[in-house]
Image 1 (cartoon, rainbow, N blue to C red):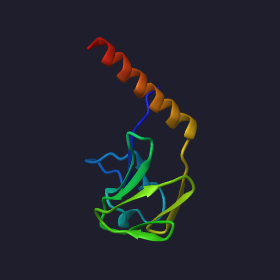
Image 2 (cartoon, rainbow, N blue to C red):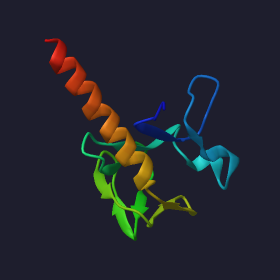
Image 3 (tube, rainbow, N blue to C red):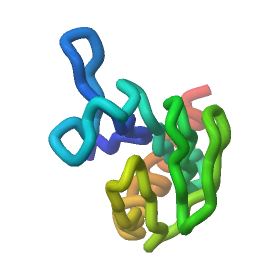
Length: 111
């Protein structure tokens, strides 16, 4: 299983690709090319970092440019009037963590 550990939300252009292209929704010209990063940490937790000029809010808490906030399932993420619900697929996260641990064990055995 190939699991992405981070996604970039923003506005795709000829020069910049994003994983989730918000230009397809809402007020595209007001969204930064790289607006936000959602990343899974080594322990399976998630955070959102605001990369853009516009504020992003999570459950009503404004996240300024450069700041980050820990995410949990059912968080409401709002970017320029667009709302998204963040959900964690616990089964896939657990499976990923188990795979990482197994690879580490095999690597340690070879050393």
